[in-house]
Length: 367
Image (cartoon, rainbow, N blue to C red; front, side):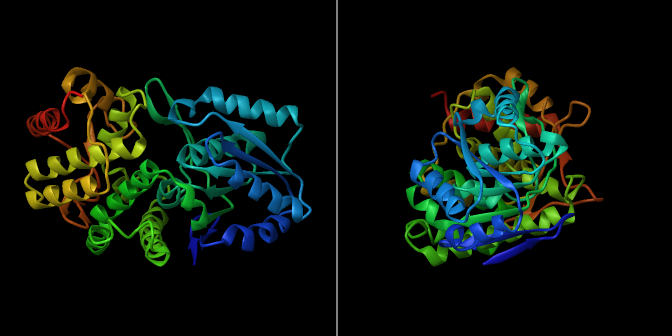
């Protein structure tokens, strides 16, 4: 499968089984560049060496560098370390980076590419379901700070994205669940039929390659259409933040002990509760969402809602806040996010927010 992301500049997404070996060598050979493969140290060695050997066999100059895995290492310090390695190796503007890994890798290496030598090309090779359906599309790059997630970064588009579903065969169960959360988010805001497909695919998604390809493709189409309409997140693209305002606060306050998918799953539930409390959305949607997240074995426990003051402080620091007031994406119904007077995210009255946070404190427990 092939998608074209129509931004400036446009770039292709190649999706399928075996596309790394089929397409990557010829694509890279056409660039006339030196290559640095950057991966986190939890990507299977076999996957990294496979990409290295593909480039070696094509007669290309390619080296590999690893950095420590995890959101806790998605920092300015890690970026500086990578920059120093590239400078020590005397790589210049004739270099193309290959970001091989999950969402942390694409965010970090994309940011690195956007500033190194004032900008060098980057190709994304996502190895997780989450990175395929979310982080590798749309050009958001960035790092975390002690103040919150992704507060430092750029919009910078890759040259191309190669989504080889063969690499998902070694994906741990938790990483599967993380990726499904982002697909669920896309379904909630834009495609009720996709939500229904996920409901009936709980036991078959991993083991049905054609079904998996279809669901990834449908999810990518949703994000493609949104980012093409609003690359820099001035309006429509705010919909993609659904579940992430609360989710990012949970991640930060948990000091990344919860995975991104777990935190966003909790965020989806709380923000869906906000739409119910505001009178926009039927409560049955919240029930269906909770059942689906549970079916995909998401761990929905956190203590952050027990400390209301810390949570509200974290929400005020979110990059989507305006004048210190949190804004949230809302749903009208399953598959339909709310837009009104050209606004795609809305301030929420304190009474409604407090009711939702009270519900969350009881629902997610203290453990």
